Length: 326
Ligand SMILES: Cc1cc2nc3c(=O)[nH]c(=O)nc-3n(C[C@H](O)[C@H](O)[C@H](O)COP(=O)(O)O)c2cc1C
Image (cartoon, rainbow, N blue to C red; front, top):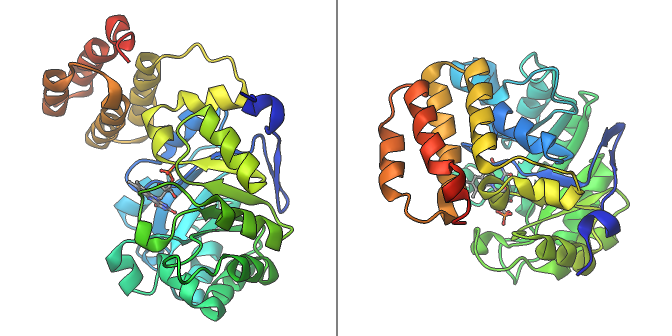
């Protein structure tokens, strides 16, 4: 099998920003806060996106949004993802104080969740090219680098991937990410490579391929089948962030134990104890997906009321013996 790092790894030029690798961590609601993004970056991800943040909601500057947008100087470049349907709200969000630290704005045009689509947001926008175009132009007026993440169509009978990709480029987008599943596939089934390939053939800006990458073999196949400029990993990046080190050829002597303890340190340094615990428990649950015999420990973990207690349970869950059970 080809090695991704020897065959496909490269830097990624997005507008005037360069990412160190073309292996990206996707936006994931509920997970991709600053501590998690930094873990992925340190393991080799060229970029890691915040979860989707409501463009309109930014004007309220509430505590929850502040947590989603928390970042620090060691995260460069920084990429925020916005969700919405109103061009002026995007323009305000991009020009406002809340996103001032972020050089890259990604526009969510792929979320398939019914409430989002009903609001005309997420992948509803793939049905409305003129509005999607005005949103991209509105973001571009901020001077930021603008990227778009979208699906190829609502279903297999309504594939718009080539014209949508061209519209993004013509409207000023600096990169696109294509999640190779249609809206009605939600998150299941294999991505359809030919749709991503069609996007790549339609434009000259970088095209990132997303969907179903769980191994180096999947990553190589995705690059081979689509001709994309890079890949974006979502759920498997949560389950095993070390995939970023494997794909980018970084020597990583980390284990899940060392990673989760570092997550705990980092989460504590930027969140209060309650928020830090909530985050670490969620990440630890994903790390545990393939560990045998952890049911009781998992219950114990969820019962922990302090970081001190949580650390000692994590030590038992991810201690050396259990790492071997993967
Ligand atoms: C729990 C969860 C949360 C997600 N949140 C977002 C999000 O905030 N923004 C976004 O563009 N996509 C989001 N996605 C979609 C992923 O970024 C990605 O496109 C999708 O999971 C396919 O990649 P995968 O097969 O590697 O998981 C989410 C997916 C999941 C499962």
